[in-house]
Amino acid sequence: MPLEPTWSVKNLLASYPAPTLEPATLKHLHKLSALTPPEEGTPEFESLRQDLAEMIRMVEAVKTIELPKDESGIPDGRIWPEARGMQFEEGASGKALDLPEEAKGRSLLDSATNTTDGYYLVETERKRR
Image 1 (cartoon, rainbow, N blue to C red):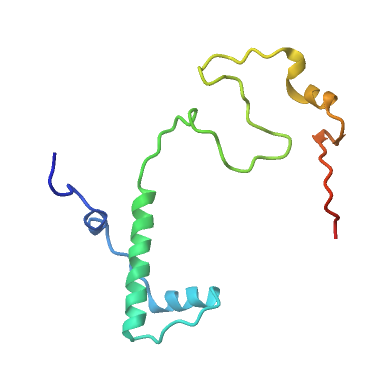
Image 2: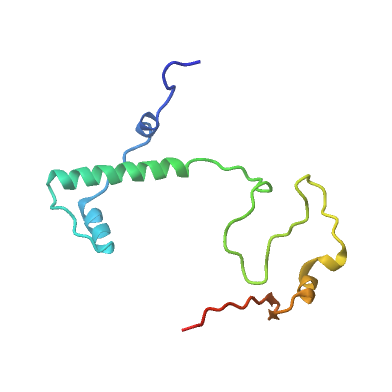
């Protein structure tokens, strides 16, 4: 077992090329953020420019990571188009779910007391403005 760390983020990032962040770019980012940049040439300006350059270097390093092409084990968390959903075809064991036909899909809405346009409707006490 090593007594010291075998690698560090700082050493890893040092192996990537340092991005050049022009003062005009930093000023433009401040303008987009509705912030006032420090005066160019001051220690604060240089410190901010170096910090942001290090963050850019970190993002560029993360972008080089290759992700596995097989996404079957991880559900997709993005927003999906309307009327499209996840297909739950398998249980946790990997075997197909064996549900009775009447307990699947939109037929579940038939037992609901309040529905509208194919969705469950839940009434609340809150009044709309």
